[in-house]
Amino acid sequence: MSTSTPSALSFTETLSLLSLALASFGIIANTFRGDGEPLIASLAFSGIAYAASYAMIRWLGPTFMKAGLKGKDMSKVHKKEIPETMGAVCAVVYLLIIIVFIPFPFYKDIVAATSGGGNRDVVIELEHVQTGRFLHRFPHSKLASYLSAILSLQSVSILGIGDDLFDIRWRHKFFIPGIASIPILIVYFVDFGVTHIVIPIPLRPYLGGLFDLGFLYYVYMAAVAIFCPNSINILAGINGIEVSQSLVIAFLLILNDCFYLLAPYPHPATDSHLFSLYMLLPFIGVSLALWAHNWYPSRVFVGDTYCYFAGMVFAVVGILGHFSKTLLLLFIPQIFNFIYSAPQLFRLIPCPRHRLPRFNARTGLMEPSVTEWQYPPKPIVALFLKMLHHLHLLRLATNHEGQITESTNFTILNLWLVWFGPMREDRLAIELLVMQTLCGLFGLFVRHNFALWIFESDNWTVR
Ligand code: UD1
Ligand code: MG
Image 1 (cartoon, rainbow, N blue to C red):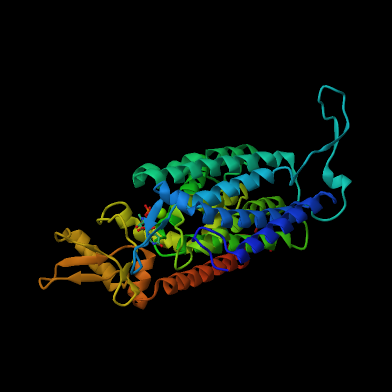
Image 2 (cartoon, rainbow, N blue to C red; image 1 turned 90 degrees about the vertical axis):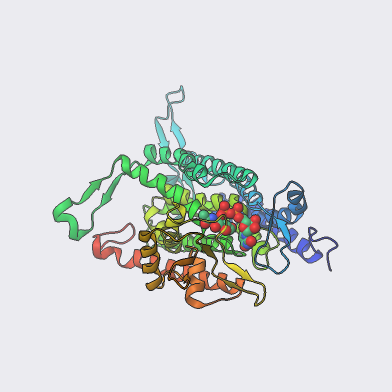
């Protein structure tokens, strides 16, 4: 059945979303009959997250447009305006879902004897009461981690919405995720507090077995929290790429979690990876709903809110799950894009407001976008640009005097087009996502196989 307005759900969509939501509610109700199975409940909540975001993204489209939250799709023949900031819907649904989920994974120690006044003289931990290998449950001390995660995600969503409304300047908004990460850093401090790094075996004679980074370790974690959201936001500009890259990272993180949860013995890192699953499953739910609307040809844009929110979800699970270095292995394309972008980000080279690839209306293909040099660059900059050009890391255009007149913009999207020639927007997105997935799988492979060459144990195998 066709829809009368684009914002209405079709009959089939309504039916599917309703069935999904009802089935999910059923599963959640069922978990109350047993001893409550948080992992199953989390999956069901993710189903509800998907259904709710999908419907709301559609319904709220016109409302967002009316409020001025819209953007022009620059890479189409008819540059029509579509709703922007739909990531805000995802962030809100996500936050509500993980709040409703709070009662599920936490258990209270059972107090067996007390001398009164709230003293917990003898407590029976749940492990001793229950049988079975994994209970998928947290001691209530983990609640602090969970609540701090919510706090950080809320702060960063507010920043994102502010940015989408007022277009905050890059240099002003850059550090805000660092401040938003303070709650999780403090929980890390009181709960875990490890600031030592293990020195690789070949360097041990010089540095010893462990090296205490101390305060610098917190600076490093704040830097991760600043990097993840911003790096997703600048690997953007073609339909679907922001959500898809986030989904790839989320799925790879879940794969990594499964390695630990399916380990042949109860693993010390189990709790951290369960925490990661509880945060990531609903994230995948809301992101898939957004993906369905944002993939080529986009019906909505995600807005900066989504990029910040998604990046912060990853930073939170990486930091509180104690696997921030593994996390960075899944950000290889984003790290490359960030370093490659640095000359423009730090204004050593002029940076236009938009660096997204240029749409050629005649061929219908994407081409690298360029920065035009009104005046010839300084000799040192010209030398740098020419060097990159020779290394095939840039394309330059020069005039008859050999002066540089244009240089392609410093993003991985443009570089890909320099390397492989013009292509359609969706093709470009797919190729980049395949590359990202391969890099991520390679990163995980290295993490789980080669870590033992330079460390005598990693946190799930001992050599
Ligand atoms: C970042 C990039 C900018 C890039 C932009 C695209 C840096 C420093 N900034 O800026 O170079 O151009 O993202 O998102 O690298 N748009 C499309 N098609 C899409 C996605 C977005 O045309 O598939 C356009 C729309 O007009 C949309 C706008 O980009 O309204 C969104 O840009 P915004 O997210 O506000 O840009 P920034 O994140 O500031
Ligand atoms: Mg953006």
